[in-house]
Image (cartoon, rainbow, N blue to C red; front, top):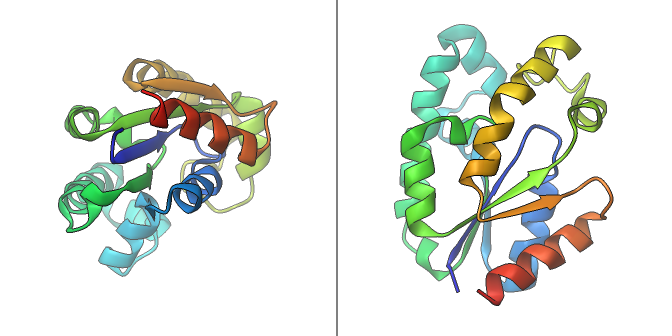
Length: 170
């Protein structure tokens, strides 16, 4: 069994909620990569985007990903909720593929928009731009995944159970 489960997907797909459930069920550590970036940078992601731009944020995100994956204890079981754009970086995809299983939590752009609109996320300001961004990322999510779970018709507990079943039986 892999000691890393990385949850990918667009904003609002349930990565954090499901990640916490999986980690609790397996007795593993859960890390939300976005939260970890904010903690290490002492700055909200929205401000990083506003002051430094997305390219600078992606460099920070990749550095933090490397550090989280290399941290002591990560080999004992880590569930990692990725940022929505983490997998757009080839190095991030390679790191994650080499160390564990990537699970894509699939959701339609309309459902994702309803879940995140008005939350202040820097890439969730305009519905049209949000849906266009989803369209640009979706193929990479699918191509990078060891498993795809459609989250729309399932509860977070059901999504977590499916993920755990596949990871523990492969």
